[in-house]
Length: 426
Length: 178
Image (cartoon, rainbow over all chains, first blue to last red; front, side):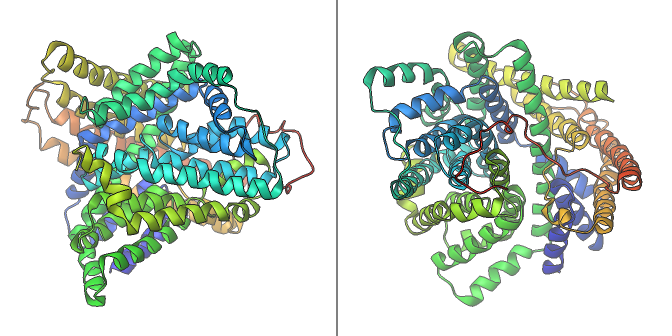
């Protein structure tokens, strides 16, 4: 029955049914087959929305949308250029650094790709960078958007798993930075080999001017992180404060946000929120169905029979998560694997926050390879190069992410758990 | 229908702005005045429920729900139509359950009120069947449009996605053309 349910989910998603409805319809059919009252699906979907930490989802989406419409990308690119522009292949590093800075505001890899790629891809191509390399750098660096706070997948995952959103945010800091700097090193090595150009020399006044210009957008992640780390507010409240700051900064400091742009920002946030929140609600029903049918017990007994160590369990689960992430959307992968794998992971002694971080990194790796690679498709459109060529150019960057994943799996106390424990968030 | 979509967008947008305002005011009250707003937690949860369901309907109207179309796009035209119809039927299973059993479920809370604001709980749960019904109507409309487009254009829906503003990048000699 478990494999039938799993196959049903893959077929439903594969035929193009929206993921939100695929999760709920398969659950409804399983529960119907088990003679469960149809009031239960309704109750579970409703309960899936009625969780306070989820309020951070629309608010972070709104905050990111505000920053997008306030045209902050150019300021961040200028600032990043003064930092790493003098390196060989400087624009590639600028692309990555900008993604890291932008990740602190947007929360999704797609908005990173669109905003950063929109400026960097045309510039890099004009400066003679290979199109596939340009697209690969943009797509891979956008993964940092889901690793560094405030990450939308992290907000949803924390609520879904019932762990601290702030704790997961902070846990993502080191892996996010490791991916970012790993990508810079990889792109630098490639740039040296291909003799890509050096941009500008470091000039203090130029740097200072770019920094001043970038301070208003950079304050947003500082407010969010500082507020959570300092115990001033929860992640949900941080999202609300970030929105108010976004409006204030856009209207009065940057002066790039008009009333019409403000309307567009909130309208875009409304549409994205609708899609994200509804899938979160129906995923709650899927989680209940898997628990009710004891599928997680089946997975757990498989690993118990195989007598695996916690590391081998995590490795096996990661491989499954990456494979699922290649063929499914990250949210779909997450909603399916959490109820199935989390009980097994905790049973063998893996910290839930560690499991969550491994899942997020696997998500990042999975979305770098077709067929389910939204960031790759977007950069393919922007750079006008086919996805397979980008994927080939992306292999070195995927290797960087796999190295970070292995480090996160092998050394959880240093890479994931250290910061949340230090700040008392777990 | 554009006006209807606009009303939906404004409704969800207003709910998000209200959530932002109340969330921020709560922080200000706690730190500036040393007290918190008693009803804010309950009010924000109510807003969240409405954002989810009305937003879910808006996403249905805008076809912005997350979905995987790579496999469908690779299929022959007739199979694409079959997948389209199966997907719509699949959606309808959820929306009909939301409508029929959602109504039944909501009516069970006629005499219950929320703790702080004393709002009848039925008003909260009723959003499930209302949005379920609206989504069911949307499925019927989508099937109608899909069949009509399939007959007229040979495709039940468009998978085309174009990104404005990226056509004017100067071509260079390096890289591969798509």
